[in-house]
Structure formats: structure tokens, C-alpha cells
Amino acid sequence: MSDAFCHACRYNLRGLTLDARCPECGEPVTNSVRLKVSLPMPNDATQSAQRLQLIERLHAAAEIAGCPGDAVMMVFLAMQYVGRRDGPRNLSARAICAALRDYARYAFGGESGAILELASRAIHESEDVGRIVFAMVEAQVFRAGEGDSPGDFQGVFTLDTLFTAQL
Image (cartoon, rainbow, N blue to C red; front, side, top):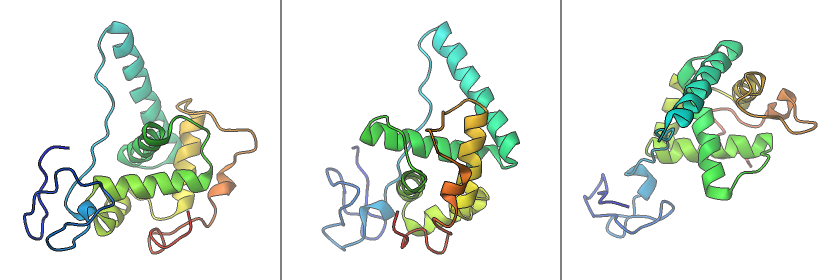
């Protein structure tokens, strides 16, 4: 972690984990730092072609879901984030929603930033996430597990309950 300063008191947060609080003022670290996850840059022509194909599939998923491309990208990056953190595995609807919550909290400087960014991308409830995930499945970005369905996302969270729901 490079130098990151508390937005409230300017204490250097270097070395603290994302779930810590500033030792000077008690402000959560996530209110001051942002996480950045992005697509890796290709090293050769094959990787470049694969990256281009992925981007095309993500655009197709946005069209299928009828949502902004940045909404699809946010869900995709959240799933990549949890995959890097926990290792690749089949994620349940609740785990995907939890990954999106955690990613948004860390990427956008805390809970209020996460809610604003999700709303600006037209992600207002878990059903929106399910629509995006299954559009990515249809566009061949991901594969669904046996028995997975968009209905699994029904009633998991709304923006009002995102940080209080049991995910």
C-alpha cells in the first residue's frame, strides 16, 4: 500500500488494513482509500485479442441486460475482486451481491460513496445484479452453475438495505 492519508485528520494510513480505523481520529480506513481493479494490459497479440473479445462480450451483456456498460463492468470487476481475494469458485447470488457491496465500498470510499455509485449505474436492488449476471452468462463472459437462476437474486438487497442485509 502506498501512502494514503485519512480524509478527516491527514494521518498516514500506510500499513493499515481496509477494515481498520484511523488511529488518530477513529475514521474507517475505507472512507479515505479507494480500491482499483481493472482489466490487465495484454502482453502479446493473443492476450490482446482475448481482452478485445472480453470487452465485446461485456458490451453485449450490457445490451442484453438493457443497462449502462459501466453497470456491467462494475459487477464484472466485483466478481474479479472476490475471485482474486478468495480464489476462483462458483458464487451464489448472495456471494455475488456481497462481492459487489465489498468492492463498491472499497472502490468508492465507504458506504455512502458505494450507494451513490451503484445508483448512478442503475443498480438499485439485487434483481438488477441478477439481470446483469445472467446477461453476462448469455454473452459467454461467465458460466452459470447447475441450478443457478435469476430468481436466486430475488429480494437479496435494495440500496436501503445493502449494508444491513445478511449477505
